[in-house]
Length: 578
Image (cartoon, rainbow, N blue to C red; front, side, top):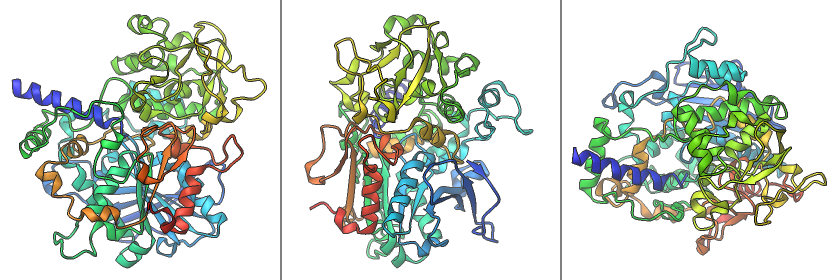
């Protein structure tokens, strides 16, 4: 019993540290193979970015039988393929292919805006590129039936009240007892999945080396580092299979290409009490195998399948009609996860959190304001979940002191740099949402904190709320990741253990190719930029903005992340750090 208690405590420490790293389908495309090992299906999108074709690709890549029972869908790898509508139909004929690993609790759908913007920007320069947004294998557990209905109430009833949609009943959120096959989904399997996908889609290694740019967002930068250093045939003397020889260059979005979480740890204590020796690894792995440790990260506030599903449902309303008064808060059932999330996000202070009064149901909010409360940097306290999509409007605004004082100045890696705000009149006016490109307009009241500091300004708002909603609600692969493998956390935290160190076969692979590093000006590395990286800084951006920002910013200039990626695709050598 004591051993189990100590092990659980160590796992919680590791989880806390890693938390900072963090469509409509039509007929099958001609890309589907007769052997049933690959399917490609076009995706219809309402994105205002034109000239980009999207499809969802699934490639069969079964796990070993020793992995144990699992849904059939989990023997497939999936990604969203974005390409120039005027470019070649075959990936092998593209000028360049960017392959992106998602961050923690993130799915392929999160890359939608940056992928479209990058492909479109490259096409303006005469370059036909592709952007592949990867889904991790564990995303196979997600059921998008309710979201795909297009109706918020239908979706809520499907996921939370057991009602059918199109003859299907939700099987429930998967419990730890059914996730035994995920006990081995760590770094080794994750980079192997990327390698298997690349070799299946682009069989010619010399072509991969010439055309593929490997990278990721947040934790995806660390995964890219392990991929670059990996050996895939078991013989370190042969290097055609080495990770670095599958890529012409690397890109990092608010992260670094490395095999360490050190740069992403924010201001959390470095000592997580997890053992960094072989015995520690063995104890943790035994806990995962037995189920004593949860195989998927979960917490009562925002970070569990129930509440992650809410983000997609909230996106549905903001996509359909962002200015209409929201009915979602009153239609949701009351349970521990939803109530805890509501209290954290919509409590003005500790007293409101403890009493639950006023509750989110006591405010009149538009659909846009609901999504803003869930993901805007002036509302959500966790930096790795923040975007800059505008600000509350329509009534008095107050400082939000729970669960963090305004600005999080002492620990920006955890809380972000923005002042936190909240509507201040329950049972009062209809609170609306002022989109990113209307902040600072002549009719903007310019809300200020109690100390007189403006909550925000045009230079700090970069993402269109409706396009964020579209990425959440319209994509066939989720924006969020409901079942994030715990082993991916513990492997990286135990990087100095022999079992993980042996995965770094070619450490020089991290420096073998050009690197483009693009950092959010107010993201996880704000104020702690490693000078040797010579990064591109996206001013005013939060951690998720590097994926979600609008193609044209409030200064009238093109979005810098996609602009930098398109230039890197044109000539990777220009992105190499001196």
